[in-house]
Image (cartoon, rainbow, N blue to C red; front, side):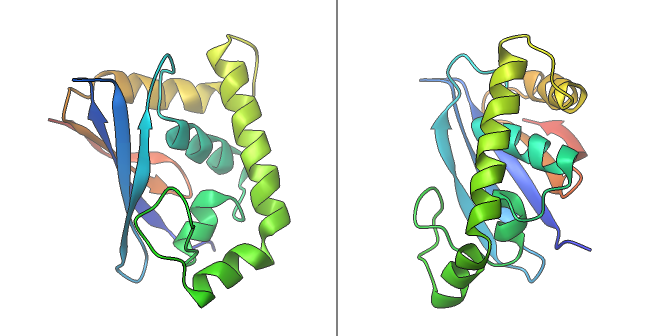
Length: 152
């Protein structure tokens, strides 16, 4: 069974549409990242990847590796550690495939094209849409289920 994460996405509309997340790892560590503009997307980039990786049961993508202790050089507040880099090195090909798959399915959904992940994207987008400025949406990895209703 894959390690779990509880991830809280934070939404900011003003002064510009952006988001960031914090993930609580199984052994208690908190990792923050995903400081990105939302732009014309309906959901944050990293939430799109979470949906895709969950849908296809990918455990060697970004979220699965983060749950297992990976430390990424970019995009998080953690400094790379020897053990964290080793997790990434052991799963580099899977991580690359997951990134491509996530980008492809998310882009297809945004463009209104068919994707088997559409139902999951739609559910997360509906929940994200009601998150107010400064509010949060909490989901659990690996299933991408919403664990608490959006709050301000």
